[in-house]
Image (cartoon, rainbow over all chains, first blue to last red; front, top):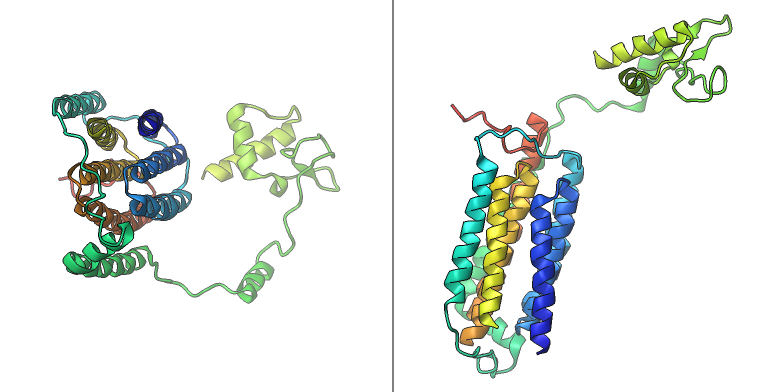
Length: 252
Length: 98
């Protein structure tokens, strides 16, 4: 009875999370949903007499693999949402139909099979308990597969290092170089701050120089581009001209 | 209970396959592949208990190890492609198309 309740709670949660993973627009939410599915499956392994696999599932999948996914999402940029352009016409609809058909096929095929009562692992783990039985199989019958996996893991680690490595093509820029470049340029001092509180109370207002002219280098170009796109320009024509000009500089 | 577990495994596999076909973001496609591998593991563990044999669990363990190695290399490839093409969409990597 307890297993039935556990199963139905976890089944509903995991199928819902899996659907959420597929249909969520944001990749980070998809990753969290996948983590939910993996945790549900870990509990199911524990219920089904596989505590070793439950621990491995949590450590390897939710611990290592999901962290890797999240790190790569950070590297690639979380805002990289899906494009809505369909390269193949009607691909999404046909993919959904194929998925539903596949699910119906499996549900009907498996649902018609009548299984006997599960044999249980009591007989298989009679000699020395569960962990020792697993170890016995792993280090005798499957020892070559086990060694091959170790070679595979080393190859994967090396491959990842080779693929993600980037050669430094130019010399590293030191603080001395940066300082020299700054003093050789036209402006050794920092750029003037924005005109907050001088002519307005927003950070997108350009500052004014002592003679009353507008200091165009005080405008933040990103904010200027946003202002031009939104049409939020100040009434003073000189200030508006400065913002427009730096927005053009930004979009070059 | 075996039937219910197997149906759940099949449903998760079908959802994962549908996600691979529908989504364009390479990382999400990869997550869907992981979901399919997990669904297969559930079937392995279920059958291990059904027939009273530990070998299903051993196979599931190997699947997990291979999946971990595959994720490492696959994500490194995605990062490399993103570095050169500034995109993680599977539609943008089409230099070998024609």
